[in-house]
Length: 342
Image (cartoon, rainbow, N blue to C red; front, side, top):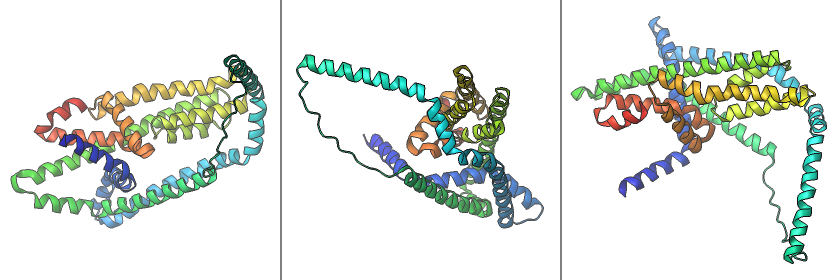
């Protein structure tokens, strides 16, 4: 009973404290990935505080350059949205007409059913329309929240890179009795290595998916194939949801670009095959094998953290699972956890 209440309390805290916990975990994740670069600069007598600034400036510059190259084609598509909307409406007109005919048929059947039941004179209850925030307001709110979280995460990454190593050394020094400090220092180093290995592996998988998508779109005659390859790479860092969004985007572009339904359905179906192969087989097997993780545990972790924290939770699901596995491997009493995860 007490254990169940404790578990519910922890789950409640994790769910409602995501605004505080998510930036901290993301910062720990990126700091683990970037720490080897700071350590490399430290070997050539560059202090950690300056090395952290250099690494973050290079990273932000690279991301800015990538954004700049993507922004051109993406902006061209965005500026054409009124024309694209008209084209979509025109091409979907036949489908809309079929849906309207089906809707009218359904209404006629409902009227017949009401007459047979003697409810033909029944009045429909009044409808209450509740107006919520507009899409623009919702998008602005989410963008502001994302920008705030990224800013907090960036600041935390800097301090973890500049002060994390000496803090860990001092903490280990305070826990030297019985070799506990050495054990936890070893665990932290292994966590950092395995998390960095995971991110590197996932980046390779997503990059390969993007290259395959770009080549396939080029062979099928899709416009801006490089853009869709980059979109597939970036969105695939968000498991499941990113692939679904990419399928919708490719389907819309295919509908605008081709005239026959045979040509229209091939690009989204082909990408759906790519993302299904990657998401259901390659990523669980390759990532799980590199980190000695059970593929079932990987999928369950993605589902759980996605439910708790949404997209951000999916991003950190496997690194959290890897960290738990590494800790369990170094603590003999956690044999059951090792058996389930490993």
